[in-house]
Image (spheres, one colour):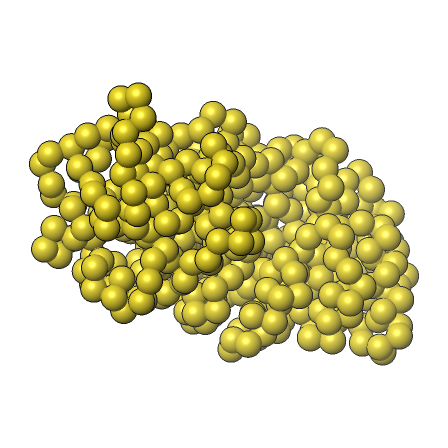
Length: 407
């Protein structure tokens, strides 16, 4: 079972949460204001080290910048992972500003604009092709620039990743090209004389079931190898996606990554037997950084309404949409939360924590038992290292933005 590197399990200093070895109130002074996100450098390093031990040694691990594109985090990841996967021109620029070799960077996502495709071609990164039309546009841009685009075909498989938080494959999807269309697509790639790299198969995300991930990985490898006969010059890279989840809520069990890694050893052997020089890649974001981050905001008001206690903070859903429950939750659940400067206080009360926006959706915690907090105390939202600030409507109601620090 994976060891916990979550900040929930970090030691405290003088009754305060410690982040990167710094007591919370000292970190507030260092940042200069609240709210802010803080990401623990050592927690990320530890998570990667644990994962390396559990995955096959030849497996390539890529970081998906969409989880957390903060420049300092990406620079750190450049020395820890084998490649980057980006989803926009802005993320591509962030990735290219690191020492990561361009041949280990790819871009995915439906609706890539011609300007983005042109930038990707010029940079020499791999484009994960999402449609027939996109393939033709890439070919036209390649002919115009005289640079053979490096492409992989993103497949929308017939199967789906069971038990995943978001299903990205199976059925009708905007992502990738349906697997039954692949023979025709591959013949067209060959005719266009593009630099074919392989396949990208991303079935789903936020999965805590090892058995489901193993099944999807097995199906992904089998699908790619069935398509070998249609591939111009074989497969150089096979990205079988990610989907490794982290526990957010009570009663969730952490993913058994050792079990997944053991099964991947078998898939690695199968790939090597069929394509000895092919790279097998997994693409992770949330799993690498999610538990290494916290969101910190400050209580600016405390009020009682018909018997319920409300802590009003100077942040909210405009900084942390996921914690508010408005980022895919069907039934809202509380993220793990603490009063970061009162970690061991004995007196507790049940409170609602709400943000500074004039909407009833701006809830960070609903009827949660916490140490008694007053104006000036610091509310900490754990599991906030992924899909935080850049996944939130920062401009909503023109409130101040949050800072980000890597410590």
